Length: 362
Image (cartoon, rainbow, N blue to C red):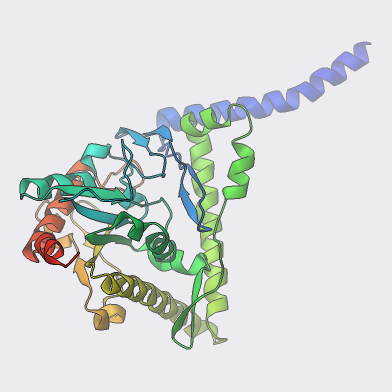
């Protein structure tokens, strides 16, 4: 009997020791190296890509902010339902993007989309934003979202929020490829991590853990980054012809840019066929409070004559102030959103797009 008790305590000591180490790691992160807790609730939508989980309500917590993320029954970040049918006299903008477009790390009223709507309202245009952004989306998924959902909302303007991560996302999704310079559909779905998420969220207490544990957030972000890097590397190598190692990286980069340009051209053409302006917003990389760089493939898309807005020069006028979060995931702060919204509003009004759309025959 005594031997059995000793064995029992020895076996019990293993999980107890693991739990003790995990608790210590959680406490260390909380008190000495805080990390952002950024839940991402995404699911499969009817188009074979990721969409926001409908009717969600959760908090993002970082050392800088505590933000409520709320979605409606269509998975849009909004505090109300938005019907497909547009109200008479409303100027409606459909937004496509990733977490920057969705407005991570800022409250809904502080997002650049909400502030843009307010600025256009002040200029006399009753404006409505339909935000189809989903964290992690690249241009391939955004194109599918535009043709599947976006045009149903009868937009007067399509605004694409672009970020440097799109160059990789477009390749690793495997949804489209270039064959002899022509954009072709390669796969019908791209759902990274969705099957695993379905299983995890059936586990009691898992959602609480994902929304409150800094250790879990740290591990999840690290694992997600590694998986993304491997996918981008593998699919990038598959997409280009066999070349020497010295020239391969240059070829892969060129392919990323050409694929991105082809996807943007496709979206622009879809909008042009419907007489809808298509505007690209380039969110630059941030290297401090006074240094911003764009990797938008300007040369690859020069022939498209895209309507394009980069806020870099506007950001530089606020050099030294906090435009991007610094202790979270480097999204726009409320100030950064206001700068972007002002630049977009000026761009849209200077081209009189609201007036042009109203004058089109119905």
